[in-house]
Length: 320
Length: 320
Image (cartoon, rainbow over all chains, first blue to last red; front, side, top):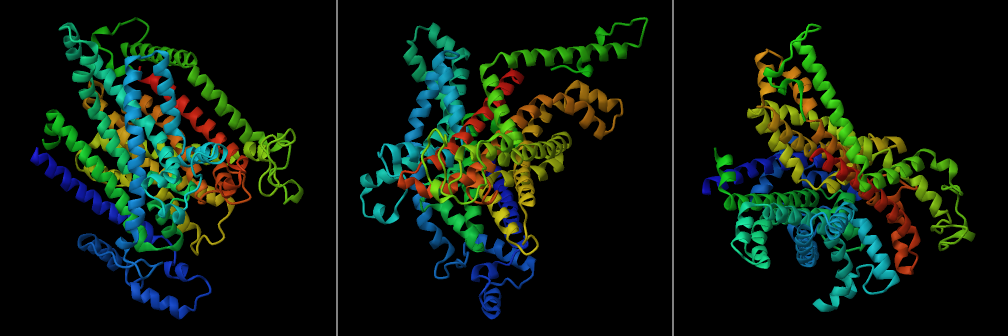
């Protein structure tokens, strides 16, 4: 097991290095003049030139590339370019916490519903309840988040007035955790709806596989009641692949949240990333893109390790 | 699925009219034809498939001839007397902030997403298939190196990276005078490039299931070139997964292109693009003006759900 983990972590480090290279190529090597973009077309050339020299934009591409790799090891990412009083990490901290809040809320809403839905669908396989759940899942997970968000904002925010259709930082910061819910409800519900499909689908597939297995038949023939079979055999086996999907979703939450954050004006990670794009704030951009990629990688890695831990065949395959 | 080379050798009927090889070829072609017919018959019996095809056909027709049949000019100049009117008998979907008829704009807007998303999906499937076959067939260091790169790309948040590349390139000096058409091309390139690794992973997995089968081994023993084996032996046997991947990819391409437009990286005003329309109308929501957002949003919902219904049906028929 240890050998498997070490191997996977080493492979992830190689992937991380490749990622840093790709991000570098995208931000630095693409034709653009970030210094000019930050100061605008009217700024005097001296100011722009001074900034270029200060942040090392005049150095050769390779020197800049090495600087990026070095910052990944030392965790010193320098200052944000657009907001020069902030360090990159410091600058990203608060939006990250805000996004995490949204993500946790969305998962808390969607997990029980989706797992229940998957179980019901599997139990009534090919009947009307199953078809309805599968179809709902297919539809909700294929609609872009910003569309779901916009429609929810119209129905529950504007028409029914049950929750706020637009996030308001000032008003929300004055409220307690319960009061904030009226602002967080719709954004987190939009995310929850998108994730419902993925999780329910995995849960359904896992449950069907377990229901068709020999051990469930044996258990039923032993005279175990059907609810006991469900709880003791089916649920345990069906939930493993679902956990994988969910952990990948967590990685995806950090980046896939962009549509929702923009629709609701939520000052989270994605909106910060968007601002960094339009400001050409390269240090923030790199760190933010790498951070979401690392989150995804870590989530997948943890999922793979969990599966290998549950299933010895997988870890033998990889180490050999 | 079956292929010439998988037919057991003992079956060869030696007829007077021709060599046994021709007979096998003929028979297997016949088998393939009947399998195709059977799949088509099963597809037509699925209500999801029929509904999906009807909706997609409707939007394709709108994209093709919409501008000639709509009741009002979707690009009409500012009309103060007609601004932000709710849905009525005269304007079924109401009018937007410039007094333009939303019904006309939604119908014509199908064009913007449909000329970009399917081509992007097709290019990504072609590139991903080439990459996936090479990785799965050669294995070894080629596969190892390419797999790491694919994995790195998979960890990147697609929408964010697409937005980043599009923003940086479209404001650079070289592309300063970026035109309407070249911007669309740029979106196609970026989305197809970001999707290629995902397709490659699927195709690679399919190739791994084939490469050690008898027909590949015997082709190698016959002394066929690697290129021949990859394109003429393996490729015909993995068309199923590739077709499924293509339909799924078109759905995701619509999702991604719509989100990019919504974030401002796609078509620019006065384009009637759906994502752009939602982004423009969003600010009016708190004032209870919901129709400029609702109708383009519903248009996106119908198109993505229809595409996914088709993809799901094709997948079910192929993986039967």
